[in-house]
Length: 63
Ligand SMILES: [Zn+2]
Image 1 (cartoon, protein in one colour):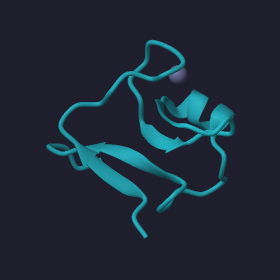
Image 2 (spheres, helix red, strand yellow):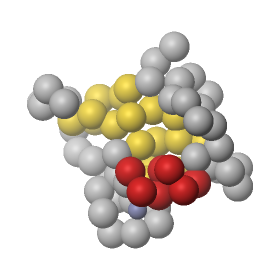
Image 3 (tube, protein in one colour):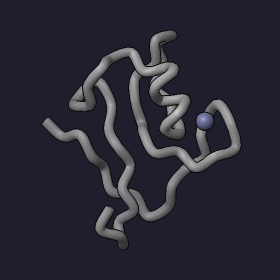
C-alpha cells in the first residue's frame, strides 16, 4: 500500500486556487487533486492508500 506519491511540482487544487496536497477518490466518483481543506471535504475514504488516495510530496523536499 502506498499513501504518498512524489511529484516535481504540486498541481492546483481542483476546487480552489491553492496548491493541492492530495490526489484522491472523491465522494462523487472521479479522482481529483485538492488542498487539505477540500481533501477533507470531498474524500471518499477516511484513509489514504491504494485505490483511495495519496498525499503529494515534493520530490526535492523532505516533507
Ligand atoms: Zn482547495
